[in-house]
Image 1 (cartoon, rainbow, N blue to C red):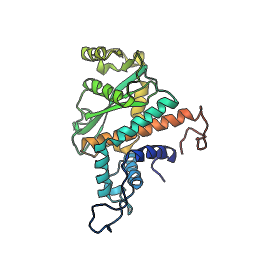
Image 2: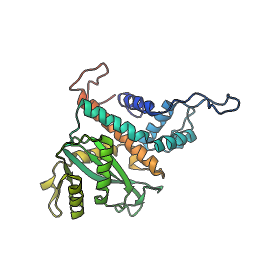
Image 3: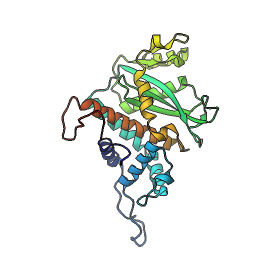
Image 4: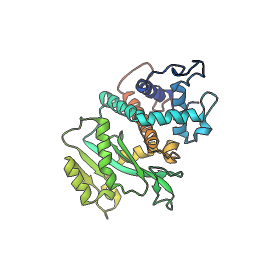
Length: 284
C-alpha cells in the first residue's frame, strides 16, 4: 500500500527526478569498480514519502532495499540543493498554467506543531508547556494553494514572520503578481508594524481587529486555515524530529508540493479529460 496515491506520487517524482544529477550504478572513483550498486533515487524518495506521511523515524521505515543511513545521506544532499523548493515551484507553475492562481487575495497565518528533538528551527512552545515546538508561517492564494513557507521556533510571533513569508511566496511564484493584492490576516497581525510592512511592499491589508468577535470578521482567511489542516495530515509536519533546518524546510516544501498537485488534480478533473483522470474526488 503506497503512502500517497500514485496519481500524486508519479507527477511529483517526475519533476523530482528531473532535478537530480545523473549518476551511474557504481561510483567512478572506486579503485576496483566492483563495489555495491547505488540505491536508485526512486526507492529513496518512496522511503522519504513514507517518513513524511507517517512521521516515522528513518530506522523504522528502512527496508532491505534501502538502509536508514542511505536515507539520511540522500536527504542531506537533496535538502542542501533545495530540490523540494524547486519541485514546489514547478507544481505552482503547472497549477497557474492549467487552473490559474488567485493572487489578488492572499492569506497568511502561522501554525504551531511539535518538535520534541529540538534543533535549529525549534523553540519553546507557548501552547504546550514550553516543550519543543515548530512554527510554520504559510502564505496561500484565495483557493488555499500554498505559495511560500517559513519555519521558525514556536515562540516566535506571527507578525515578524509575515515579511519573510511574503518574500518566500514571491520567490516561489515569480514576478507574476497582479497590480492590486490584498493580504488577509487575523487579529494577531493587528499592529502598526504590519501595516507599515504591507505599505512598503505595495500591498493592501485586510486585518482583523483585536477585541472584535471572530465570526463577525472571518474574511477570506479560510483558505490558509484549510491549508494548515491539509499539511497537518502529514505526520512528519505534526511531529518533526529532525534538527537540521534545511531538512525541516525540505519536508515542508515537499508536503506543499503534494498539496498543490492534489489541488491541481481536483480542479482539473472537472474541466479537462485525460486517460488517467480520477472519476471521484478521492484520489487513487
